[in-house]
Structure formats: C-alpha cells, structure tokens
Image 1 (tube, rainbow, N blue to C red):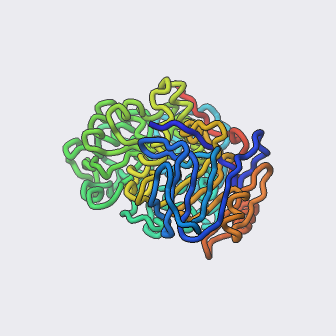
Image 2: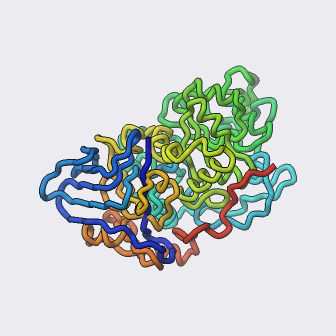
Image 3: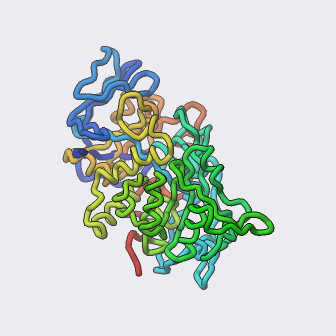
Length: 475
C-alpha cells in the first residue's frame, strides 16, 4: 500500500526554528502546466520518486514515474518531500474556533446535553458564543490551511481559502451537490433526552429529506448512555415509535442510507454498526472531542472491520483539535494505545483524504492524486523518506506548499517567491511561509491584524498546544 514520508514548513504560524535544515527544492517558474516531482502518495501505490502534472485549469492530467511537459512548464522538484492529497475535515464548528480550550477539569459526561445545558447535575460547558465575523472565520480556515487541510464541512464559511463542501458558494469549482450538515437531526437543541420513545422536537430529519439530497452529515448518538443510543433507534426505524405528538414529531424515521453520515456515533452498539454497514452509510470520527467529553469514543475498529467508510473530523476548539494535524495525532495515539496499531498509518491517512472525500460526496473531484481530479495537494517536507507515516504525524512546521485546484494558497517562501511574487509573507519565528490570497480576499496583513485585535486563537504552536483537550479514555 503506502509507504514514504513528508513534512511541512509553516505559514502564519507561531513557531520556533526547527532543528533540521528545510529540504531544498529546484523551482522553475513557467506558464500553463505545472510538474511536481517528489514522493507521490496515490490510493494504491507510492511513487518514490514520481511526478504529477497539473494542467492550466488546475486538474491533474498525469501521475507517474515521469510526466512529459512542455519546455515552458513550471517545475517544482523536491527530493526530500512527499506529495499528498489535501486533508479534508468532515466535521468542525468553525465559528466556535475563535477561543482556546480551558484547562481540563476531569469532568466527563454521558450525553451532549449534559455539557450543553448543564443537565443531570453537571457543569454547563457551553457558556461561550460563536464568532461569525468573516475575518474570524477566514483566520480559522487559515489555521487549517497551514497544516495541509484544503476542504471542510464546518457549518460556516469564508470564501477563497478552504473549499466549504456544505455551501454551494464555497465549493470553489468542485462539481458536486453540497453536503447537508445537521447538528440536531431530532430537533432536540433545547436539551430533550429520551430513552423509550421519539418525543423530541416537531421537525426531525426524515427519510425523504436525506434521500433527495447529497451527503447528509448529522450528529447522532453523541454520548455513552441509553439516551444517546435511543437517538439512533429513532433515526433507523419506521416502527420503533409510531405515535405522533400533538405539535408534530414524536415518531421514528429511518434515514440510514448511503447518503447518511453519522457524526460521533459513540453509543452505537455492534448491532447498530451492522445496520450502518448493511445500509452503506458512513461515519465521522472525532476522537479527541469524544474522549475529552465522554471518556469514550466510537467503536472505530468494529466499524472498520464491517467495511464502513470512516472520515476524521476535528469537531471544534473547546473540546477537540485546533487543526487536522492534532486530530491525527490523537487518532495515532488512540490507535497505538488502545487498538494495538490495528488501523495503521495508511488507514488514518485515508480518513483525511479519499475516505473523507467519499463521506462528503466529493470523491469524483478531490481526495486522491489521480488523473482527472482537481489538484488539491500538499507538499510536506520528508527528509527521512517515511512517506505516509510522516504525513499523518506532520505539523505546520513541515508544510512546504498547499495547492487548491492547482493554485498556490500557502507555501514556504523559498518556493513561493520564485512562483508567485504577489504573495505576502507571514513572519513568524522559525517559519517562512507566505499566503497567496485570491483577488479581492483578505490579505495576510488584514487577517493578522484582525486576529490580534480580537484575541483570536493562534494559527499554530511548536509542540502540544497549551490546555489541549486530553486524548485519554476514562471510566
């Protein structure tokens, strides 16, 4: 399968100097098509080295040991680097990523409404407000971008940085039906918890709603008690509860089908997972947030053994990860400490690339390095030549170049300066990255000034972020 490595340099990140010298690249500016030579990670093989050619429209039109190109093509030749598809974050509440997590108190919950509403004698955790200022959302998108994420499903959007796969205006050229994102598919935002019936809100998600759209990503069974599992019963059966409430709702619905994507799904039993697999539905795994809130997480290995497609999602800053790099770090740790490496690097890598694209309904356009796909690519430094092992452990310090549709958005200055003289440096200790905004979008200076004025959470750290939510199981 997969087997080489990479690294990243750093854009708008707050990082000290790295211990090793950044790998050098040979860069020649040209016109029209672009050829990148590095270790290439494709879905079924590693080209070490190999080449990818990107046409003028931003699509991949050659993947191989060598890709012939016109003499005037742009060339980026990096022997100690690895090229991966851009990461896809299939679950984040991006408007809550403006403030950092608080120190962990050790309190764990059995259901999401306990921390949302302070139910069952628990301390209410959600006493903060969303920040929907477009510049704040752009700053958070940049935080993901500098770590190699190029697409997201995040409830809000800012144009010009990440692809926003749940907004038609945010697809940035991807030919797909936008995903639908539901936080409360049972219409239970008020804090309703049931165990034997479906007496939630009056407007729950229905079979027809899910059947007539694209990917339907919804929070399901977020918790570890019977009330959490009851949610799945109400969303996977037409006969579990057939008694309507006077004001609407009250009956169960069955919308588990190929379009359905269950986010969190912590309370699902092996029997529930059998149904998910039989219906070809998918899952989104957010291990850090699950472990920090509930002390448990999805039965990810059982789901994987049933052939269920699983993607990774960062959830949000208050209880999750600041970027996909840190969410991968938690997944690696959980896989090693609790699953004895049963998942492995290649599976985790697919959870943020091809499998994530499948979950979002975008696999025909992005998620893998293949002819015909849009060139959403990330070049990571990989001086030890460890391929996918390095990618899933990468940090923003390892970022060398981030492309969306073949267009450079972020890159190390020694590469970008030779290709895009209009890019603006983001000066940070030990990092030399530049942001290349699209015309009419916020500049690096504007974003940095806004973040400083509003005290927004930094773009990156050296090492473990302060007060990062724990990635540990609990009783």
